[in-house]
Amino acid sequence: MSGGRSVLFSAAADSYELAVREIRGEFGRDVRIQRVGAELGRVDGPSVRDLAAACDAGRIMFVRHLTEEIASFAELPPSYELAEVILGELPQYPEALGVQAWTDDAGTGGSYYHRIEEALTGRGVAVTRSGQEYVVSCFVGRKAILVGLNRRADSLSDWPGGRMRLARGEERVSRSEFKLEEAIATFGLELPSHGKAVDLGASPGGWTRILRQHGQEVWSVDPGALDPRLRGDRRIHHEPTTAGRFFAANRVRFDVVVNDMRMDQVTSARMMLDAADHLRRGGLAIVTLKGGGRNPLDGARRGLDVLRERYDVRHARQLHHNRNEITVIAHHR
Ligand SMILES: C[S@@+](CC[C@H](N)C(=O)[O-])C[C@H]1O[C@@H](n2cnc3c(N)ncnc32)[C@H](O)[C@@H]1O
Image (cartoon, rainbow, N blue to C red; front, side, top):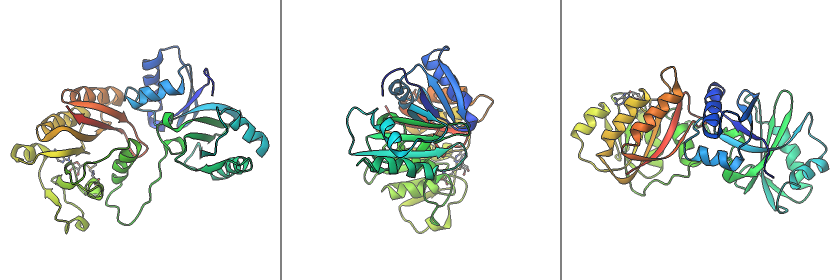
């Protein structure tokens, strides 16, 4: 894992060019970038650590996963050789490694996972899909199989290519639920115990349900209805009105504000400035800034500038479950 290696970055196919713009904006126009898959690019110049730091701070928003490339194959080599390639890169012989495989389409690359698993366990190294200090990434492209290796701390996500998979149980109220779950897991957010949360744009109630799971009492603001399954819960208060009208009359002081309202980035961010008056100092904000407009990158940046008037922005990223939007994590100053 020496310097000067290429880094493979994942972004949603539609957002790939935005990710490229951001990387060049951060590291200079001369950085060499090459597209190697619908959702994957290769960048030469910056280290995986510097890229991860820029993504973590929200200066690069449209990259959702990183790995440092260590090898490229037409076909995976035999087990012994494959293990050598991987183990030879590590500073110490590991007890266990994470292994993640994915393909250029929606595939999981399952057979490649098992080939790498077999190679490593044959050398006494335990293998899991997540939770290890170092992660082996295997991207199965049309022309080549690319293998990456780096610290999980620099990967941005502990899922293959950042494609987090969540169970689609019957209890799900909306697809939007995945976005909040992914944000909480990816950024390791801890919600205050017995907190009070306001959910702006709550209907049909997916985020409200997740907030309840995290122990919050929830004020769910939306002219639209909540799913009937949420009705019996006395710690959910449906406020069937707009966010502006709600705050004009509200007297509750909240610990958390979440906002998934369907509106452009700046309008949504401005509503967060109103929300700040009702949020305790240091309170947590989770916001999706929605794509809208011809230039989603500039729109997102404008939305962030508005948010910064009253919040410290900790993260801003297009997560796997975001469509045409980014998720922002911020704290009320
Ligand atoms: C993407 S949906 C929210 C889905 C929800 N987070 C869930 O998990 O089920 C967007 C919602 O924003 C609401 N909305 C749009 N403008 C609003 C406003 N000014 N005040 C409150 N809600 C608003 C819409 O009624 C719509 O239900």
